[in-house]
Length: 331
Image (cartoon, rainbow, N blue to C red; front, side, top):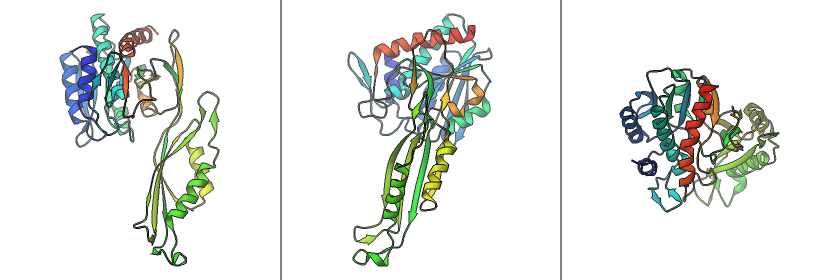
């Protein structure tokens, strides 16, 4: 397969978080066919990470995730782009990494390997488990869509669940009940008014209220309500969680679903750089050496209905990964 054919093949394999088994099987075969020693790591039933190395201890690991957000969108292409779910986040990157690996082997360079993990789009469970079996390389090149620019840093992420309880009553007698939804709305407004802080390099921390649900019917005072929030934090996560708990002061139950810290990343001279607003698996892969972050495609179209990757960037990424591995090995 060509680079573009492999990208489309990977997109064509559905791998929404929790359903990564088919793409694991496919990549296991692709890596074995290329001569790598490939091992699977059980993350939870039906879900596995892949670690692939040569006979030489890896000094550099090329890494990205296998899962995508829903729904699955099959591939299509035109002269400029390849479209489909995972095109830039991150099926195209997987293809570019594999082709870079082919070229490195042709150059008799063998001190590298691959790590492909599950679950990045939700709780980074795959990365957390992979950290336990690290071969302790010197460098980790993590792949996410950065428009082929080397990240100097990226924000962390805090996912929260907010819950409120009330008392059900007939809506014509609201004084007989207690609205959990009104409590939740007040709590959310209090959170929206918080200054979450900023970093000189990473900028402001940002808040997204992702989901709101509650109540049972339009004519019943709701006795329960819930919302999920995602904060892209440029400062320490504990500082932000403390602010939220302090402002709410028990007005809502706060459950931390996931949290990770903002990252300052390793860079290499000669590569264009950028600062990224999104989070990655990097905070959970501390046993894999100094982290770098780079990949083709734009995060602005990731998760979108028209998710796509530019073919020119995909081709350039192969050269970038090859040159980056060579420079890191020389370092």
